[in-house]
Image 1 (tube, rainbow, N blue to C red):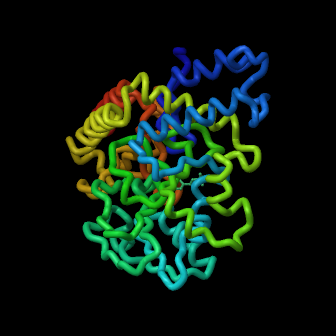
Image 2: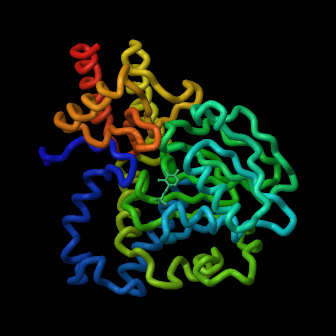
Length: 361
Ligand SMILES: *Cc1c(COP(=O)(O)O)cnc(C)c1O
């Protein structure tokens, strides 16, 4: 395994090594079926067990009460931008959004395309999306309040979720689901593309509170209705079987090897603290997010010049530290340190950063 790098890609992203090894071991003959899990029917006992196990593990890991449904959809987190608005908008009740950067902005745009009554009630555009708004006005007449719990591109993360009274919170948790403990009860809906923190690309986790299903309008096409997936346990049509299988293995790893979300949060905190301490130590590296809003998942930083940033990324790549380039829309550097990034990877990065600074600072 010496030829594997420390992979800081933002998504698709690093997967736990034991998961990849398990996939490899059962790829040709899944549990005595004589077939790969990719080749069995999605109506077979084999896949049924895979699906139900992934749902049960999600429930346990996130402490979901019976009121929540766990669904697996396709189309990525981006498909949820319009689906949320189509399904959860109540007649005469505006849709409230907080705009904390690219992904929130896209979610807002999709709701607007649908002609919905969209209200952007708070945001951080005024300071280039470098922070999370301290307070969010809560409008009791809103259909829901939509937030992006972790802003993958800008490296900011909500530390405390807004208190909304009875208004359901909706969150895009693509880049920090399963990374920390939170109370799911105020959430009407949570969605997350799996390819950051939960598995491979191709499947989107949707966690839905049962009362949200009552909102689904009757005139939506079948594949755009949450009720379709809820009524058929995500098996209305052929689901992304292999992706769900891998998500299941990641959940098993999180539950049985790591010891659950609280244990994971602890490790994630240590990784983030280590990296931010290195950034803060001198003026050579400069974190781009406001300290109180810093993400524990995506650590964004700059070097003194764009030339040094390019050199940093190239030399890091040669040293086996991949994926450190910032998003093309903002430049700079970004280390994505999702659940599957081991502490040793962050230690190796910090070691490299100190060394690079010594030579170039
Ligand atoms: C990556 C990402 C998306 C886009 O996900 P797709 O699955 O590619 O549509 C949306 N929101 C957040 C927060 C992301 O990190």
